[in-house]
Amino acid sequence: MSLLEIKDLHTYFDTKRGLIKAVNGVSLTIEEGRTLGVVGESGSGKSQTAMSILKLFEQNQKIYSGEIYFDGKKISDLNAQQMSHIRGNDISIIFQEPMTSLNPIFTVNRQISEVLMLHQKLSKKEAEKRSIEMLQQVKIANPVQVNKSYPFQLSGGMRQRVMIAMALACRPKLLIADEPTTALDVTIQAQILRLMNDLKHELGTSIMFITHDLGVINQMADDVAVMYCGQVVESAPVENIFRGSEYLHPYTEGLLTSIPRLNSERTERLDAIPGSVPHPLALPEGCKFAPRCKYACDKCRKEEPELVKVGENHSIRCFYPVKRGEK
Ligand SMILES: Nc1ncnc2c1ncn2[C@@H]1O[C@H](COP(=O)(O)OP(=O)(O)O)[C@@H](O)[C@H]1O
Ligand code: SF4
Ligand SMILES: [Mg+2]
Image (cartoon, rainbow, N blue to C red; front, side, top):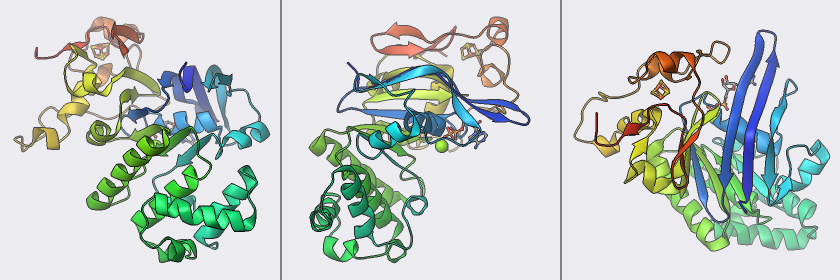
């Protein structure tokens, strides 16, 4: 049994201009102790898939159809109060900018302790001790000092460590990390990524790691879901995407060729994907990638492909997957 399973999920925003299908038929699974990397350009529905798991919704947003199962239990139809037990306790989330989740007027201790006192019913004293232990666990060198600090007294990298400590305080089974290092400089980013990998191995936490950067996926993920226009267009173990495996989705192929590090001999991004993600209120007929796909033909512009199995644990949503080595 998978730890998390999303089945044909549709989450829409009801706006004056029409229904925005932010999540438009997403199916994915996250296995126990593994990291699922969710990748795609901005606007592909990565964050809204994560928000749907935790029901962190705007007023005009809801799940129209589909199901989400966590640890064998259906969680997609829980109400806000039932969901609040799961959030922070079984499933935690961290975002790109820690300042949006940290409260500027409270110390680190107060914020971590609050989570522990609420979910684990620890006393104030026990919570403070555990808060310092958590800061140690995320490799903060002076945990007692940092525990007494306010968020503005800490650097960006340090704040992200505090967020991770807070997210892991109740030992959740699943940590959702939505572009957690995008706002950090490259050196700090590398440190945080290493920390998250270490913690995954120490604690056995499963991670849903969201990023627009396929290079980061290579370092972090065991399994990959590539998203485009609110759908998963390819899902596979990470080695299938970067090495081996016969077939790729044309969009994944485009993302791969736009990773500068893997193509350092190239000065230009010759094969980068042309055009941009379509507006959610003006999605094309047929395959949503067709206007940007160099392999598109008439069938692609009329019919929409399903996610189809091309190998063990490997599925692609395309009529004509790219055969590696053939161009
Ligand atoms: N508050 C909102 N109201 C209306 N549409 C939204 C809102 N937030 C996101 N969307 C739309 O939902 C789609 C998916 O967005 P998102 O999940 O944030 O993408 P990603 O995280 O992959 O960049 C986009 O088309 C975006 O415009
Ligand atoms: S179905 Fe056609 S347009 Fe869509 S990705 Fe495949 S080849 Fe390209
Ligand atoms: Mg996002």
